[in-house]
Image 1 (spheres, rainbow, N blue to C red):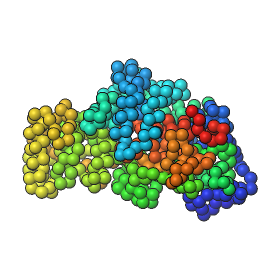
Image 2: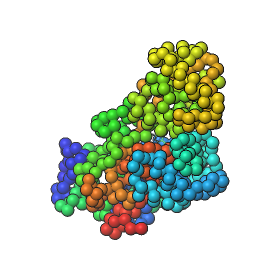
Image 3: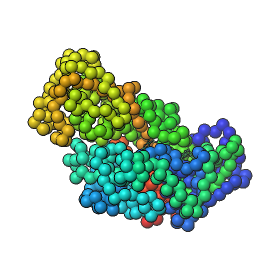
Image 4: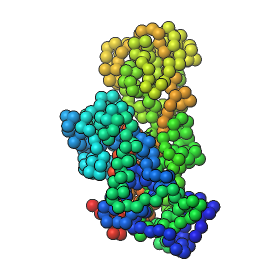
Length: 489
Ligand SMILES: Cc1cc2nc3c(=O)[nH]c(=O)nc-3n(C[C@H](O)[C@H](O)[C@H](O)COP(=O)(O)OP(=O)(O)OC[C@H]3O[C@@H](n4cnc5c(N)ncnc54)[C@H](O)[C@@H]3O)c2cc1C
């Protein structure tokens, strides 16, 4: 068999496979958080599992991450910190914050089983300290656990459901993605699943009935055919590193300077599945984070468009700010501060323009005469009364900008760090089964993590990607392992 010259969206005909080089009940493609959890569940369900990873070892983008995992509904950490949460509250929040039109069936089960998922992770060697860390959005620099990570305590979500922190970081100082993956890869090994590294999966192998029965893989220049007796699980990450795919589906995302992903985030697995008849959805969706905070103090400034007008409450989740700015305002905005509010941004954003008056600042920024003055004047008038009738910033961040000098931090996509990854991908059921454009199952094919469109349809909260990767990875692994490749329970 040879797939020389074939694109990933071509499929190999099983009839052309003279002999299989390796086989297992379940073949998992990619060993990030979703792949590890799929492999563990499939192995624990009694299947013989083979994980194929193109890099020299497991980890993927999951290992580069901050390690925040979005869980709630009353986890032991929430309880120990005196934070009241219910699956219903979590559901309400995610349905609002991950829209428009998120997948209700996925979010429902994700919330109902979130506490159980927490216990599963701990049971598989991922520890969590029973503590809360007050600075939002980023992973705590300490080994503390719980943070607000999606603007739960800011407008508009604070009007939808009581504000509750749900991002859980494993017990490790600073970014904990590497530690998380050490734990999950170790658990994968303990489960009995075998891992083969350094082999690039290129195409799927399909039989006469259209069922996926294996994978064609290239290792050291040699092609190998790997048979999957029960199913193939695709957990091979996003397509943020594939310029052509991003330009085709969501070109503005390419402007973000930091593409959050390893080399393997090239969308190959998505195209492999398309070759077998799979549908893709929400390919234009992306997480767009601009790390304006910490420190929280900077939320006392105001964000304005290139035209000098406010467009959002500055205490909103920075992913929401990023999406609003990139998709609605061409990725251009300034943070306006006065001397009392200014503090060095932890991501190193500098004050680009410093002037003695707002009028001078407005001139330096090339804005139409009077616009920024009127924006600041209106904001100050209301802030002095402790209200923000336009965008409803929380009163604790309302402070008139009156102390000279004034500064503008140019936060354009070409000026400061913007981080993005894709959220669209294969259309799957909550069971991990991959669907065709007619909502039929592609037999033998399962997927999870950023290879799929998951909990975050368009909106996002930090921690959702590792959470839905681990959660739905488990379900995909279980489905593939079950007798006829169908998910039960
Ligand atoms: C700096 C940073 C911070 C982040 N912080 C957070 C956070 O705190 N919380 C959060 O939820 N998300 C965070 N994210 C996003 C999150 O890390 C990813 O979205 C998530 O890890 C994706 O998991 P995955 O299992 O789908 O893919 P991955 O972890 O990327 O795993 C996919 C694996 O598949 C392999 N692979 C790809 N193609 C093939 C192929 N053809 N054949 C064989 N193997 C293949 C890859 O090498 C890789 O190992 C962050 C990302 C970055 C970069």
